[in-house]
Length: 300
Image 1 (cartoon, rainbow, N blue to C red):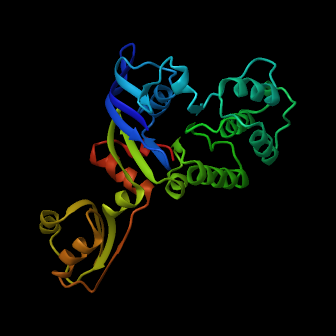
Image 2 (image 1 turned 120 degrees about the vertical axis):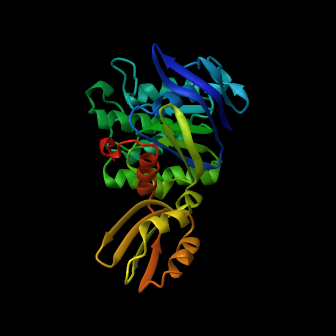
Image 3 (image 1 turned 45 degrees about the vertical axis):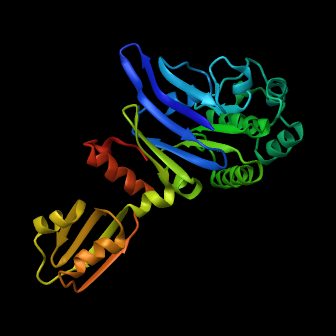
Protein backbone atom coordinates (compact mmCIF):
# COMPACT_ATOMS: atom_id res chain seq x y z
CA UNK A 1 0.00 0.00 0.00
CA UNK A 2 1.10 3.55 -0.74
CA UNK A 3 0.04 5.77 2.12
CA UNK A 4 0.15 9.57 2.36
CA UNK A 5 -0.49 11.02 5.80
CA UNK A 6 -1.06 14.74 6.47
CA UNK A 7 1.25 15.68 3.61
CA UNK A 8 2.16 19.32 3.03
CA UNK A 9 4.21 20.27 -0.04
CA UNK A 10 5.21 23.85 -0.75
CA UNK A 11 7.05 25.52 -3.61
CA UNK A 12 8.16 28.87 -2.24
CA UNK A 13 4.89 30.71 -1.49
CA UNK A 14 2.67 28.15 -3.26
CA UNK A 15 1.17 25.25 -1.28
CA UNK A 16 0.72 22.40 -3.76
CA UNK A 17 -0.63 19.90 -1.18
CA UNK A 18 -2.15 20.86 2.15
CA UNK A 19 -2.69 18.24 4.89
CA UNK A 20 -3.28 15.62 2.20
CA UNK A 21 -4.03 12.00 3.18
CA UNK A 22 -4.82 9.02 0.96
CA UNK A 23 -4.29 5.28 0.59
CA UNK A 24 -3.58 3.37 -2.63
CA UNK A 25 -4.07 -0.39 -2.26
CA UNK A 26 -2.72 -3.10 -4.52
CA UNK A 27 -5.13 -4.90 -6.79
CA UNK A 28 -6.79 -1.76 -8.11
CA UNK A 29 -6.61 0.95 -10.74
CA UNK A 30 -6.92 4.33 -9.05
CA UNK A 31 -7.92 7.42 -11.00
CA UNK A 32 -6.66 10.76 -9.72
CA UNK A 33 -8.75 13.67 -10.98
CA UNK A 34 -8.87 17.36 -10.23
CA UNK A 35 -8.73 20.87 -11.59
CA UNK A 36 -5.63 22.15 -13.34
CA UNK A 37 -2.92 22.86 -10.77
CA UNK A 38 -4.71 20.91 -8.04
CA UNK A 39 -1.61 18.91 -7.03
CA UNK A 40 -2.03 15.64 -8.96
CA UNK A 41 1.44 15.54 -10.52
CA UNK A 42 3.03 16.71 -7.28
CA UNK A 43 1.37 13.82 -5.46
CA UNK A 44 2.71 11.27 -7.97
CA UNK A 45 6.23 12.66 -7.54
CA UNK A 46 5.90 12.32 -3.77
CA UNK A 47 4.71 8.73 -4.16
CA UNK A 48 7.67 7.98 -6.42
CA UNK A 49 10.15 9.50 -3.99
CA UNK A 50 11.13 12.35 -6.31
CA UNK A 51 10.03 14.95 -3.74
CA UNK A 52 10.26 14.90 0.04
CA UNK A 53 7.19 16.39 1.75
CA UNK A 54 7.65 19.50 3.87
CA UNK A 55 5.35 17.92 6.44
CA UNK A 56 3.73 14.51 6.85
CA UNK A 57 4.82 11.15 5.47
CA UNK A 58 4.62 9.14 2.25
CA UNK A 59 5.32 5.42 2.56
CA UNK A 60 5.40 2.43 0.22
CA UNK A 61 4.55 -0.79 2.07
CA UNK A 62 5.31 1.07 5.35
CA UNK A 63 8.76 2.22 4.06
CA UNK A 64 9.48 5.95 3.66
CA UNK A 65 9.94 6.36 -0.09
CA UNK A 66 12.19 9.42 -0.34
CA UNK A 67 15.84 8.40 -0.86
CA UNK A 68 14.95 4.79 -0.01
CA UNK A 69 16.22 2.44 -2.70
CA UNK A 70 14.15 -0.53 -1.52
CA UNK A 71 10.89 1.42 -1.52
CA UNK A 72 11.60 3.18 -4.83
CA UNK A 73 12.38 -0.13 -6.55
CA UNK A 74 8.72 -1.07 -6.02
CA UNK A 75 7.44 2.02 -7.85
CA UNK A 76 7.74 3.09 -11.49
CA UNK A 77 6.72 6.63 -12.36
CA UNK A 78 5.83 7.54 -15.95
CA UNK A 79 6.09 11.31 -15.87
CA UNK A 80 4.39 13.70 -18.26
CA UNK A 81 7.95 14.84 -19.06
CA UNK A 82 9.93 11.63 -19.49
CA UNK A 83 13.69 11.87 -18.80
CA UNK A 84 16.21 9.84 -20.78
CA UNK A 85 19.97 9.96 -21.16
CA UNK A 86 21.28 12.09 -24.06
CA UNK A 87 21.94 9.98 -27.16
CA UNK A 88 20.30 6.92 -25.51
CA UNK A 89 18.19 4.40 -27.40
CA UNK A 90 15.25 2.44 -26.01
CA UNK A 91 17.43 -0.68 -25.74
CA UNK A 92 20.04 1.27 -23.76
CA UNK A 93 17.43 2.70 -21.39
CA UNK A 94 16.04 -0.81 -20.89
CA UNK A 95 19.52 -2.02 -19.90
CA UNK A 96 19.79 0.86 -17.43
CA UNK A 97 16.41 0.19 -15.78
CA UNK A 98 17.18 -3.52 -15.66
CA UNK A 99 20.05 -2.71 -13.32
CA UNK A 100 17.88 -0.60 -11.06
CA UNK A 101 14.65 -2.64 -10.89
CA UNK A 102 15.15 -6.26 -9.72
CA UNK A 103 11.80 -7.20 -11.24
CA UNK A 104 12.65 -5.86 -14.72
CA UNK A 105 11.98 -8.53 -17.36
CA UNK A 106 13.79 -8.40 -20.70
CA UNK A 107 11.38 -10.97 -22.07
CA UNK A 108 8.42 -8.78 -21.20
CA UNK A 109 10.31 -5.74 -22.51
CA UNK A 110 10.66 -7.35 -25.92
CA UNK A 111 7.01 -8.43 -25.94
CA UNK A 112 5.72 -4.97 -25.03
CA UNK A 113 8.14 -3.12 -27.33
CA UNK A 114 6.92 -5.22 -30.27
CA UNK A 115 3.39 -3.88 -29.71
CA UNK A 116 4.45 -0.26 -30.21
CA UNK A 117 5.63 1.35 -33.47
CA UNK A 118 9.03 2.13 -31.93
CA UNK A 119 12.51 1.29 -33.24
CA UNK A 120 14.39 0.20 -30.07
CA UNK A 121 17.75 1.02 -31.67
CA UNK A 122 16.85 4.60 -32.60
CA UNK A 123 17.89 7.53 -30.40
CA UNK A 124 15.01 8.61 -28.17
CA UNK A 125 15.75 12.30 -28.70
CA UNK A 126 14.68 11.92 -32.34
CA UNK A 127 11.19 10.77 -31.30
CA UNK A 128 8.16 13.00 -30.96
CA UNK A 129 6.85 13.71 -27.47
CA UNK A 130 4.08 11.16 -28.01
CA UNK A 131 6.59 8.50 -29.02
CA UNK A 132 8.78 9.35 -26.02
CA UNK A 133 5.76 8.73 -23.80
CA UNK A 134 5.41 5.32 -25.47
CA UNK A 135 9.06 4.63 -24.60
CA UNK A 136 8.35 5.44 -20.95
CA UNK A 137 5.30 3.16 -20.94
CA UNK A 138 7.27 0.27 -22.44
CA UNK A 139 9.93 0.61 -19.75
CA UNK A 140 7.35 1.00 -16.98
CA UNK A 141 5.46 -2.11 -17.98
CA UNK A 142 8.67 -4.12 -18.36
CA UNK A 143 9.87 -3.08 -14.89
CA UNK A 144 6.98 -5.09 -13.39
CA UNK A 145 6.91 -3.07 -10.18
CA UNK A 146 4.20 -3.38 -7.55
CA UNK A 147 3.08 0.21 -8.14
CA UNK A 148 2.82 1.96 -11.51
CA UNK A 149 2.21 5.73 -11.53
CA UNK A 150 1.01 7.19 -14.82
CA UNK A 151 0.81 10.96 -15.32
CA UNK A 152 -1.35 11.67 -18.39
CA UNK A 153 0.16 8.52 -19.89
CA UNK A 154 -2.56 8.02 -22.52
CA UNK A 155 -1.85 11.35 -24.25
CA UNK A 156 -0.41 10.87 -27.72
CA UNK A 157 -1.59 7.26 -28.06
CA UNK A 158 -3.86 6.28 -30.93
CA UNK A 159 -7.10 4.36 -30.15
CA UNK A 160 -5.52 0.97 -30.86
CA UNK A 161 -2.61 1.57 -28.47
CA UNK A 162 -4.94 3.02 -25.83
CA UNK A 163 -7.05 -0.13 -25.99
CA UNK A 164 -3.97 -2.35 -25.80
CA UNK A 165 -2.62 -0.41 -22.80
CA UNK A 166 -5.91 -0.69 -20.92
CA UNK A 167 -5.88 -4.44 -21.51
CA UNK A 168 -2.27 -4.81 -20.32
CA UNK A 169 -2.92 -2.79 -17.16
CA UNK A 170 -6.07 -4.74 -16.31
CA UNK A 171 -4.19 -8.01 -16.82
CA UNK A 172 -1.30 -6.90 -14.58
CA UNK A 173 -3.68 -5.85 -11.80
CA UNK A 174 -5.47 -9.21 -11.96
CA UNK A 175 -2.40 -11.41 -12.46
CA UNK A 176 0.24 -9.68 -10.32
CA UNK A 177 -1.96 -7.76 -7.88
CA UNK A 178 -0.30 -4.45 -8.67
CA UNK A 179 -1.70 -0.96 -8.10
CA UNK A 180 -1.94 1.51 -10.97
CA UNK A 181 -2.46 5.22 -10.32
CA UNK A 182 -3.52 7.29 -13.33
CA UNK A 183 -4.02 11.03 -13.73
CA UNK A 184 -5.97 12.15 -16.77
CA UNK A 185 -8.26 14.89 -17.98
CA UNK A 186 -10.10 12.26 -20.04
CA UNK A 187 -12.62 11.28 -17.38
CA UNK A 188 -14.55 9.05 -19.77
CA UNK A 189 -11.46 6.90 -20.17
CA UNK A 190 -10.86 6.73 -16.42
CA UNK A 191 -14.46 5.74 -15.86
CA UNK A 192 -13.98 2.66 -18.06
CA UNK A 193 -10.73 1.62 -16.35
CA UNK A 194 -10.71 2.55 -12.69
CA UNK A 195 -11.99 0.81 -9.58
CA UNK A 196 -11.49 3.87 -7.39
CA UNK A 197 -11.23 7.60 -7.92
CA UNK A 198 -9.87 10.44 -5.80
CA UNK A 199 -10.77 14.07 -6.43
CA UNK A 200 -8.15 16.69 -5.53
CA UNK A 201 -8.81 20.42 -5.36
CA UNK A 202 -6.35 23.07 -4.19
CA UNK A 203 -4.05 20.49 -2.66
CA UNK A 204 -6.69 18.68 -0.60
CA UNK A 205 -8.65 15.53 -1.34
CA UNK A 206 -12.39 16.10 -1.55
CA UNK A 207 -13.28 12.43 -1.68
CA UNK A 208 -11.85 8.97 -2.38
CA UNK A 209 -14.43 6.36 -3.36
CA UNK A 210 -15.19 3.32 -5.43
CA UNK A 211 -16.39 4.33 -8.90
CA UNK A 212 -19.73 2.53 -8.54
CA UNK A 213 -20.35 3.97 -5.08
CA UNK A 214 -19.50 7.45 -6.32
CA UNK A 215 -21.94 7.37 -9.21
CA UNK A 216 -24.70 5.91 -7.05
CA UNK A 217 -24.48 9.02 -4.88
CA UNK A 218 -25.90 11.19 -7.68
CA UNK A 219 -28.65 10.88 -10.23
CA UNK A 220 -30.10 12.77 -13.15
CA UNK A 221 -33.87 12.98 -13.14
CA UNK A 222 -36.34 14.10 -15.73
CA UNK A 223 -40.00 14.23 -14.92
CA UNK A 224 -43.14 15.78 -16.40
CA UNK A 225 -45.79 17.43 -14.22
CA UNK A 226 -49.05 19.26 -14.77
CA UNK A 227 -48.82 21.58 -12.93
CA UNK A 228 -45.13 21.86 -12.01
CA UNK A 229 -44.34 21.50 -8.31
CA UNK A 230 -42.86 24.44 -6.41
CA UNK A 231 -39.05 24.30 -6.91
CA UNK A 232 -38.38 25.73 -3.45
CA UNK A 233 -40.46 23.02 -1.81
CA UNK A 234 -38.55 20.40 -3.81
CA UNK A 235 -35.25 21.88 -2.63
CA UNK A 236 -36.41 21.46 0.96
CA UNK A 237 -36.93 17.74 0.34
CA UNK A 238 -34.04 16.96 -2.01
CA UNK A 239 -30.38 17.99 -2.28
CA UNK A 240 -30.76 19.50 -5.75
CA UNK A 241 -27.55 20.57 -7.47
CA UNK A 242 -29.14 21.66 -10.75
CA UNK A 243 -32.74 22.31 -11.70
CA UNK A 244 -34.13 23.38 -15.06
CA UNK A 245 -37.71 23.51 -16.35
CA UNK A 246 -38.95 23.51 -19.92
CA UNK A 247 -42.70 23.73 -20.17
CA UNK A 248 -44.07 20.85 -18.12
CA UNK A 249 -40.72 19.01 -18.12
CA UNK A 250 -38.31 19.28 -15.20
CA UNK A 251 -34.62 18.27 -15.36
CA UNK A 252 -32.63 17.86 -12.15
CA UNK A 253 -29.28 16.68 -10.88
CA UNK A 254 -29.73 15.44 -7.34
CA UNK A 255 -27.36 14.17 -4.68
CA UNK A 256 -28.80 10.88 -3.43
CA UNK A 257 -30.02 7.48 -4.55
CA UNK A 258 -32.50 7.23 -7.41
CA UNK A 259 -35.09 5.28 -5.41
CA UNK A 260 -35.19 7.96 -2.72
CA UNK A 261 -35.43 10.78 -5.27
CA UNK A 262 -38.15 9.09 -7.31
CA UNK A 263 -40.13 8.37 -4.14
CA UNK A 264 -40.24 12.08 -3.34
CA UNK A 265 -41.24 12.98 -6.90
CA UNK A 266 -44.01 10.38 -6.94
CA UNK A 267 -45.76 12.29 -4.16
CA UNK A 268 -46.32 15.12 -6.67
CA UNK A 269 -48.13 12.86 -9.16
CA UNK A 270 -45.79 13.13 -12.16
CA UNK A 271 -46.96 12.21 -15.64
CA UNK A 272 -43.69 10.29 -15.79
CA UNK A 273 -40.38 10.29 -13.93
CA UNK A 274 -37.12 8.52 -14.69
CA UNK A 275 -33.66 8.51 -13.18
CA UNK A 276 -30.25 7.95 -14.79
CA UNK A 277 -26.79 7.63 -13.18
CA UNK A 278 -24.27 10.40 -13.80
CA UNK A 279 -21.06 9.84 -15.68
CA UNK A 280 -17.76 10.44 -13.85
CA UNK A 281 -17.37 13.69 -15.80
CA UNK A 282 -20.78 14.90 -14.65
CA UNK A 283 -19.99 13.96 -11.04
CA UNK A 284 -16.74 15.91 -11.28
CA UNK A 285 -18.44 18.99 -12.72
CA UNK A 286 -21.14 18.99 -10.07
CA UNK A 287 -18.71 18.45 -7.19
CA UNK A 288 -16.50 21.26 -8.43
CA UNK A 289 -19.46 23.57 -9.01
CA UNK A 290 -20.71 22.82 -5.49
CA UNK A 291 -17.47 24.24 -4.03
CA UNK A 292 -17.58 27.30 -6.25
CA UNK A 293 -15.09 26.28 -8.95
CA UNK A 294 -15.73 27.62 -12.46
CA UNK A 295 -15.69 24.34 -14.35
CA UNK A 296 -15.77 26.16 -17.68
CA UNK A 297 -12.01 26.61 -17.19
CA UNK A 298 -11.39 22.87 -16.84
CA UNK A 299 -10.16 20.90 -19.84
CA UNK A 300 -11.51 17.42 -20.45
